Length: 363
Picture 1 (cartoon, rainbow, N blue to C red):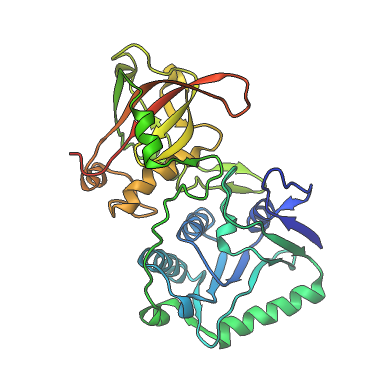
Picture 2: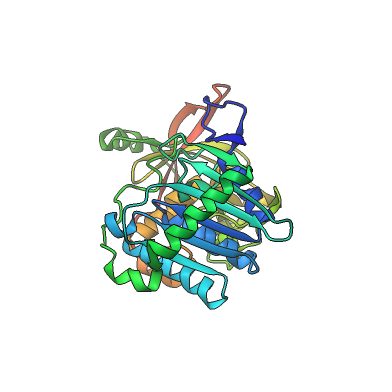
């Protein structure tokens, strides 16, 4: 038995984290059964990537509160994709609890070769499987890893009963699930490293704009830039971790960088977005061609892909294409230097400040 927790600075207790443990157990298991109250679109999307990467694994996902609290249209769509994927291959399915609201959080892992069965029991819903350094998910979760056979046997019986007697398969339940509106909260609103700026303050900041300006075309490469999600995953911790949906960077052409003096090459800088966020950005890579958020690459991705999602131009799990950009109404990111400097997060140096915009409907 082992205590697992979230990892929010400064509240680090020296115990293993849920996400690290979950990844290792998933990589070592041949069968996985997850019974939780709630899911997020992003976490189901990660499961889709994982079962594609490990087609031999059997996965059952049982959702306990969907029938009673409802799902968004985007959640319904991606759960349907996962269920179809699993059923087509004969490797599991998605189940919806019908009999009563189920609010538990049970993650079961079975290795059929060694007959080892383990579990994670506690407070983590499915959304906690997303590894995002620096991302604040809203709650500090505490779970327990269990390898004692007497307890895992009881949990197995509970999950069997829940799936077989209190639930129905997704395609038989979907028509009766209440549809709820997707949250209007921006994908950045729970990111600790990002500040929300009041409109009046933002307006005053933007009055410091200089004439140094760069128009950066949004590239639509198959497996890089905003589509790095479709690239090769990273190996480690006993599992090839798929790229996260919001992991993203812009690849800036040399011609754009050299189009005017003053491009922020090989440095970090503060960026104020046109919709009111303050993000720590950086440039790097060969010829300083990568434009990305500093520290956590998903922060910039949450901002730029989240805006396309909010406008209905991009579905989670789909590629950013020229058609998506046309539907969004903008194919350029604008970078304007401001006549300001602000202190770095570590308080060691003053950084340049830039305005960054990607407003919809400009084309």
